[in-house]
Image 1 (cartoon, rainbow, N blue to C red):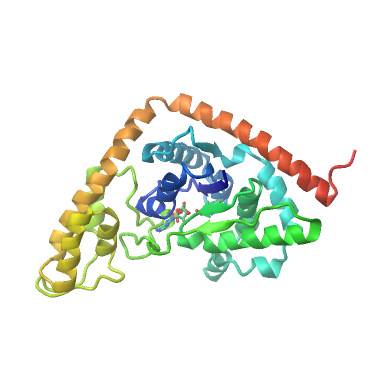
Image 2 (cartoon, helix red, strand yellow):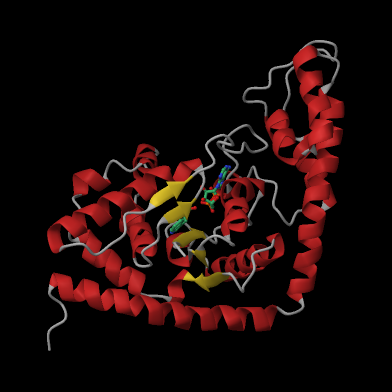
Length: 323
Ligand code: ADP
Ligand code: TRP
C-alpha cells in the first residue's frame, strides 16, 4: 500500500473548514492508503506559547480524528513531538535549503508584511513540514488549498536531496479537493482557527445558531436572484445541506424566491445534523480518554521505530553514520 501522511496543528478547535479540506479526505482514503495522521504540535509552537492550550487542543484533535470516523485499525494516529527524528531531519534539510528560496513562502511573506517579529520557527515551518512528509516516504499528502505551497516545498527538497546524495526520498504529491476550494468562515474570509470565524466540529446547537446568524448578507429582496459565488451561506449549503434540499436552495438563489433568513434557518438545521453524530461520538470517546491517549503514545513509539531506519540511511548518505 502507498503511504499517506497529513497533520493538523493544535492551535484551536477543528472546524468545518478543516473537515472539508483535510479530514474528509483522510476518511475517504483510509481504506486505500497506509495512513499516518498526526497532531502537528511542534508546528503549533510557532503561534501558540501557552502550554495548557497546546495540550488541550492536542487532546481535542485526537478525539476529533476518532469522532469523525478515523479507524485506528487502518490509520496510525500519533503526536508529532513523539517522533523527534523529524526535527533532526529538518536540520539536515535546513543545510541544503537557501534563505532566498524559503523567503518566498506565502506564510512567511504574510507574517513579514504584517510587520510581525517573524521567528526562526515560522521561517523554517515549511522545512519541518517537508521532514514530516518525507521521513515516511509518503506518496500523497491530503491537505486544503492553503497548504499546496508547503507540499511543493517538500517536493523540491526531496528532489534536491536525491540529486545531491542519491535516490533517498519519494517525491510526494499534494491531494487537494480543488472543486471544493477554501471553505469560507462566518466573516467571508478563509475559515481558520486564527481568524475566530469558525464553526467548530464540536459546536453546540447554540454556537451553530449564533455563528450562522452572524453571517452578513446583502439587501437583495427575497424575490430577486442572489449571487452564489463567494456567498458564505450558499457555499456552506453546498457542503452540508442534503442534496434534495440543496437543489431547491440552488433554485431559490438563482431564480429568486429564497430569503437569507430562510436560507440561514435551513443551513442551521443542516449543520446541526452534520455535527450531532460527531458530538455524540465525542461524548463516548471522552469516557475512554486516558486509554486513547495511552495508545497514541504507543503509536509514537512504533512510528519512531519505523522512521529511525530511514534516518540511518539519511545519516549515512550525508556523512553522519561513522563510528
Ligand atoms: P487553520 O487555518 O484553521 O489553523 P489548519 O492549519 O489546522 O487550519 O488546517 C488543517 C487542515 O485543514 C489543512 O490541510 C488545511 O489546508 C485544511 N483547512 C483548514 N481550513 C480550511 C478551509 N477553510 N478550507 C479548506 N481547507 C481548510
Ligand atoms: N501545515 C499544516 C497546516 O497548517 C499542518 C502540517 C504539519 C502538515 N506538517 C504536515 C500537513 C505534514 C500535512 C503534512 O495545516
